[in-house]
Each structure stands twice: as structure tokens, then as C-alpha cells.
Image 1 (cartoon, rainbow, N blue to C red):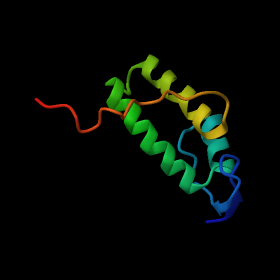
Image 2 (image 1 turned 60 degrees about the vertical axis):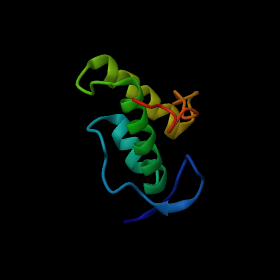
Image 3 (image 1 turned 45 degrees about the vertical axis):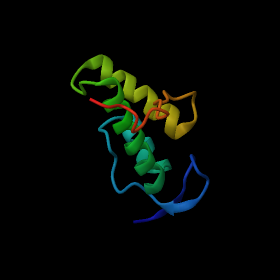
Length: 92
């Protein structure tokens, strides 16, 4: 795995091993994002999916996640934040 200078963190690290999407965004991630930052995005994406109860087959949910992917990895804007302040306080 070749090292790249990640555009998100600025560190010299191993690149994402393959394009995660079959489009321009996927190619850009493969070329410019390190594995560490990609892992951070996957955790953030999972939180967003669970928090909002997203159906990843829904086109609007896909668009929401795509926009947040770009914002998170390439700093093109503010990403959606998940309120974790109530973590562990919900009782059934």
C-alpha cells in the first residue's frame, strides 16, 4: 500500500486500498485520503445512519451521506453532528 499525504489530516500515511465508490468521489478518496481518516469517516457515517435511522437504499439518504462524506473528508463545510450528550442516559 503506497503512502500518500492525506488532504484531511496532512500526514504521510497508507492510502485507502481501493476506491470505495465507483464514481469521481470514490477515485478522489482513493487518491487523497489515508486509511486512518477513512476509518474515522466510517465511524461517523455509522453514527449518522443510526442516529437518523437512514435507509441507505433511499436516494435522499444516499445524497445526505455523500454530502457529509465530502464535508468530513475534504473540509467543504460543516458535517452533521450526532448529539452524544445523552449517551447512556436512556432507559426503557
